[in-house]
Image (tube, rainbow, N blue to C red):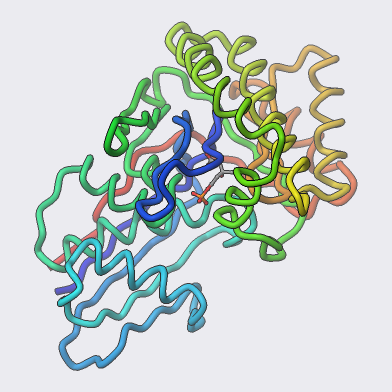
Length: 320
Ligand code: PMV
């Protein structure tokens, strides 16, 4: 009745932004991501008949505000007639600040919960359940380069290239550890309702996905860099043009982009991407990592620099 799972966050190169079905949390567009290895969330789920309500601790503290979302996810995995659960989550990186902690958390939660409840499920089913809690979490069930495709009635997620076939590095510049001002769910909805660029964003996604897929297949770094930066800036343009506007960036975010542009001008192979938060993630081949780490560490306003390789999908650590 107890199990522990570990999952890594993933960083989208071609982004998910917007929902086509809010009740089932289905994305409006497909996406392509990289699953990390050195950053992770460990989730322990214990089903206990002696409890009269669910309990959640995140990094040692009670987390009441996240509890309803976690409880809904447990209901989806185990059924609403399940026992109450004691859930403990530990992440080795800042949560709720655009480093995709919801992805690693919900991916680990569905794996741990289904093992604790003795339910055998395929990885595809687990991805569907994680995606209902957090769209990007579905991708953290898989390792390497991962594509999430929209299917008629749901999603289909798969690894399109193993990480060791193209071992890129991801360097994240943390520019603020404050929780984000607007959740990605609310911001997506504001974009869908009010941004004049939203429909164009959805229309063009197929083209960006296909360019990225082709670039990954032949390991063409320049082509992947160009489409990933374009897709990221397009997503943020959709947000900026929403009413009220959604701006996750701070001054250091922009300073990091300038640092990346300076590196590129010096011939360093590196490109940036930014999610629903002010952190900047830079992707580069291993040989260029020291230059990227140096440049980001000395950029004004950068509080910490974390580096990671490409990792594997969510997995059980132990269970009984
Ligand atoms: O999974 P959510 O609901 O936190 O949405 C995440 C959206 C982005 O991180 C901005 C993009 C993506 O594809 O991960």
